[in-house]
Image 1 (cartoon, rainbow, N blue to C red):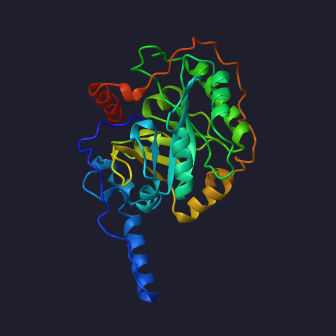
Image 2: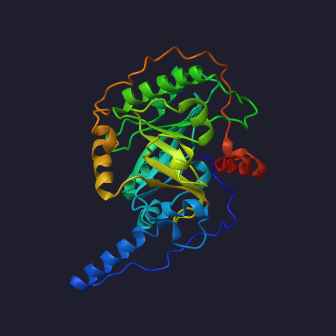
Image 3: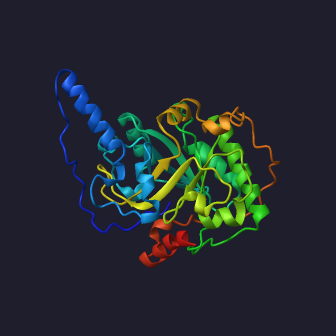
Length: 317
């Protein structure tokens, strides 16, 4: 979930003031305004940059963001007023790193009425058991929270750990993390991934978990074979009132009815129909995770503009 450099860091201003109209006329006006905002979330200003091939994501009714300390101080009330339904907030990375704004964002989003969940960025030079323990130590078991997210990508730009594990070894570590995150929260975790990691490790695996797919230059079904998606990250260059930097924008697969079911049950409604979210552990056997060398976690946001452009262009493949 790589933040992108902002071309225009100026704050975004709401174009209209809140309406206060009496009676039925006021209710009708508010309804129309709500509907307009519902389908224009990413087009509130001309500053959000979206690839033409993913432009349809903007029309999906349930929209959200993912954030870390690199978004700076967030005005969550403004984020909510802009029509944001959900936010995934970076909590942990590896076995020693906590995002410095996690608690502030975690509390602020809840107070503003934005549904929120925590995510852990997987580090491939540290045993999964240590990373799971760190996540459980850091992230509260909040019954109101969305399911936790396991962020799975290769750290190709890392100076300390650019490792790409063999497929089975990586899968073993992933299964440990998923099992422990579910045990901690009581909710089936969401897997976030990109095209490269999915191709190398996840393709054909873990069908009982909801997937959140990064695809910024094509619709997910064009990039991920036979993989239903729960969330779609369609741009890293979003602009949302209340956030002074670019931010990742994400769309939920369904409409308001499916969203209500998801929030209520913490389960992808399609998986719920298959009985996959009844607190059961993953059906595949969890193997021992390989020992790794504890290292300082690679912070992708410290990549140079050229490195960020390289990672963004990977979506073209």
